[in-house]
Length: 106
Length: 121
Image (cartoon, rainbow over all chains, first blue to last red; front, side, top):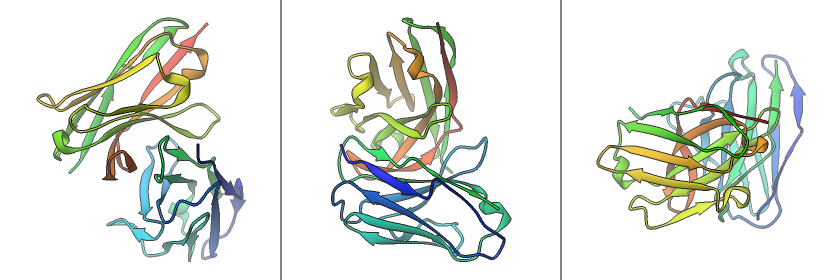
């Protein structure tokens, strides 16, 4: 199974800050990586697929990068609405697996 | 607009069975790979099972193989998860998810609101 390790597990930042979350895969997954946002009490929401393709309706303050084993999710200017837990997911192989999550506090 | 509405969750004793349903609308359900993903209390998200558009392919996470069965009714736009021999570790919110990209290696494109399953001793 492909393991995904996210870091940090949690972070606290201020409105307007630039924030970067990393996701490392236990083996190469080319660009088969997605990122999700989950606000408290809500269902997760897809932010990006293909490591860097922004979903329709997602603010352009979100961006993704990386390939192979190392990936990043960047929020260029943190907004109050961005307070949530962020997960990465690989779809290079089955079983599909997700990272442990990064809690972002404003 | 994609809509996925889960039902069937509840409190059940360890060893018993429960069947979840997910009613889909707003997209071509009969052409879509579908997934169940769960969120256990205090833990991260876990992919549980998936099913191809024609039910020909099904995959499960190791800990539910032989206990859970995923199925679908394309005429009724409904996805199911039959959960047998339930364990305490199966407790969590179960989400019905529409797959994106190419089956079986998909990302989770659209999510339902989830249904809570609590397994008690």
